[in-house]
Each structure stands twice: as structure tokens, then as C-alpha cells.
Amino acid sequence: MSLADLWSAQLERGGMWLGILVIAGLAVFVLFEPVQTWFGQQQRIAQLTQDVAKSEAAVASVAADIERWSDAAFVEAQARQRLLYVFPGDVTYLIVNDVVADSAGQPVPTEAVQSTNINWVDALVASYVASATAPTVPVAEEPAP
Image (cartoon, rainbow, N blue to C red):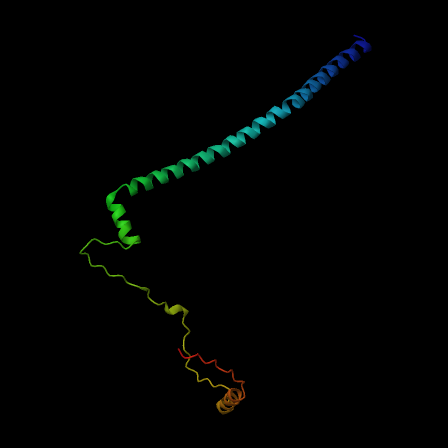
């Protein structure tokens, strides 16, 4: 085999790989949009499946409510509880403010003696002077009938 034969054989193999790369690149270019669309559709299907599951749970909840409200005893209990309905002859007691006061919010008294720096005599005199010097508003008299 001559050098020219070896060179042409290598060129043919290189050309084959170049052809394969061109075909692979063309396949990626042609199939990119359909594959992207397929992935988008799969994501949308998963989201819609979750929405259907939520809707089915809501329907089941409403069906349970309908079944509960079709029971006469439940309707009677709700009327007594919510609307305060009673049967004739029943004696009911309504308790208002049946809440125990919580002592956690109240301040704890201290044992130390506290003193203020306010002179009560001066405060009394200032209050008297303020009331004596305040302008008077005339009161309108109502006409006699």
C-alpha cells in the first residue's frame, strides 16, 4: 500500500465521521422543537392531573356536606346551635361571656414602695385656676311650648 492509498483511506474514514456529525446535528436541529413541545405538554399534563385531584377532593368534601345536611338530626342540631332555635316547652339557658380571665396579662404587684414627684397642692391650684379662667359658652334656651 502506498502513501496515497493510506491517505485516501483516512480521508474516507474522516469523511464518514464528518457525515455522521452533520446528520446528528441536523437531527438535533429538526427534532428540537417537537421535543421541547413534548416536554411542555408533559409538564402541563402533570399540572392538570394535580388540578383534577384537588377538584375531586373538593367534590368529595361537598358530597360529604350534602350527605350530612340531608340528616334531620344534624339539621336540628345546627338550628339549635347556630340559630338558637328551641322546641316548644324546652328551657334553654344562654351563657354570655363564659370565658375565664387569663391572669398572664396582668402585671404583678411589686413589694417596693413607690413615690411620685408630683405636688398635689400645686396640681389642685392649677386645676382651679384653669377652670376659673376658661371662657364660658352661653347655653341656648329652648322656647316654651
